[in-house]
Amino acid sequence: MTDGRAWEGNWVARLYERVRERGYDSLTAFAEARPAVPLYLLAEELGKDDVVGVQVFRGLLAEAERSHRVTRFVRDVLVREFAESLPDGWPAVLDDANRGEVALALGAWTADTPETHKERVRRAGGALLASPPPPGWRPLGPDDELLRTLLPDEEV
Image (tube, rainbow, N blue to C red):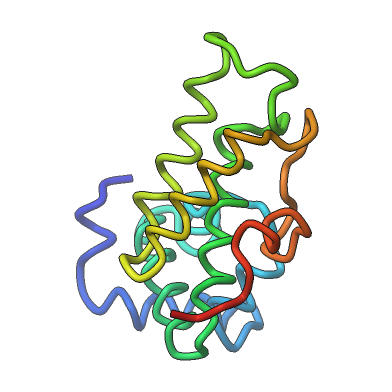
């Protein structure tokens, strides 16, 4: 698929039309029914030829901002990044063989975080590196206990 076609026409209307066709009243409800699924796969499900992950991301962020649930959205983004970058969960030992995947997941999480939450995400990522979770840990949703400890529900 070419990114260009996804941006033709009213992509927001197209995105929500596809969500409604699948029986959901919001993009958030659609995404929540698919926990830990990377954004690009959500986009493919909504329209392999004309929807891309960044559009799903932007729609989810807009809904989170309207409902004052940005922190939960930010946790959800990490869950989806982990599913893509660390499908087997947190490594037993952080070494040269897997440090790149961990850095990719945490770096993408930081890059995809709204400015209002970047500092909190940096601290949370630092905490994960300083005190690693159990081997194999992979959050399966934004309400994961460890994630909620690292990034509690507190809208800024």
